[in-house]
Length: 304
Length: 307
Image (cartoon, rainbow over the protein chains, first blue to last red):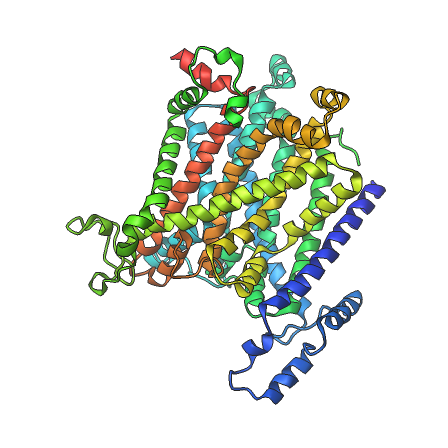
């Protein structure tokens, strides 16, 4: 287990360093922040000063060495846009997105597993067909379109829910609902497929022959064995949300890390981009680790 | 083609593999209509711009935000008009070209590059394999939005650049799948036999291993096609994909957003077409997964015999 952990950490660290180097140099290709933050008629002098303050005057390589040096002391630099430590802004945004991801994915996991198992139990039945069809639509729908239509219907038309922002629990309903749809469709499909295979396994026949009732057969015997591929997909989908549900966060004005990310990219706020990438990369590393541990818990044959 | 290779001798009664596939498709109504819809979209993409380009870009300020279902007007106005009075139906048909071209280009490029790299990673020594896999990790973690913005700032906006962005972001999927499949297949008997017979490495990889893993990859590609359409739409929606005056469905949804409360149809129709296209692709991919898999294929054939 320890050597496995070590190997994983080393591989991830290598990838992360590669990523930082790439993002550091590539993001600077988008242009000079000075043009964005100072008025067009700003004097050369004030431009010079702006560059000096934000350390943009040095050659790129020197800037990079400085940045990496600061990073070793856990100094992620300051945000140009908000003049606050970049890490602070990122962690705040990440907190929001994490809540969004946890709420959405718990709802998705429970509903997709229950409905998917039931659909698999009556393959070809009316419930199975309805579930399959709707999950396919869910997996095919563009989230920005669903978000817009939902706003038109529920916020503008019926006036039940706020259009955007945060504050009350009602503000969470639409973002969670829109984010719910695609992972739900995908995971339901995977659960159904895996459960069909599991329900035809010999141990299920044995359980039936013993006289075990349907419910324990589905949710205890078959489900546990069908869960492995399901967990992989759940992990992927959670990763996708953690990486920033950019579109949904933009439309609903949700102050998550996705919105922060796109704003920082468009505003050339390099330190925030880098900090955001490192924080999400770390979170995703932990998530993948958790998933691997879950594998081993569910399937005793897997050992690290 | 992969379809012909998976064809088994027990199908001898049928005349032609293509005909057999056609019959199997007809039996699954969902898949059949999906295929029909996709063919229609491809036709729109191929012929639409030639015939409708002028109509789709001609502004008509008297028809601003014209409501849909007004059948007294010309047929291109049946879905309404946009903020500049341009007919929505014509614009959707013309936009099919860019949307489908970007998606097709991105899927084909990422499939080719990803599969090649994946097979190299799966069949070569540990060091090369490790380098390729770490590279894939970096690409996967690299924010595609940043990539899109960089390309947008660096290169003149064009359809080709968007293909480059989407290709890079989708490579890891094929790379990982191809590598995993090669790792499994390379241990099989026929590969050992080929090695013993003195076949060169490229020959083993491309003649012996590639045909075995191709059906899986093609199925993933169909599924991915739907995803790429969605990603392209999202990028165009956020304003970092295709730039006006070029149009795609995603851009049309985005252009209709300011008029949401007064003219819902501006965003609604293009979004609906996106859903129908991706849904068709998903349904067809589901069907293909069964049809291309010799082990599962009987499910589609037996359905016939029962009737």
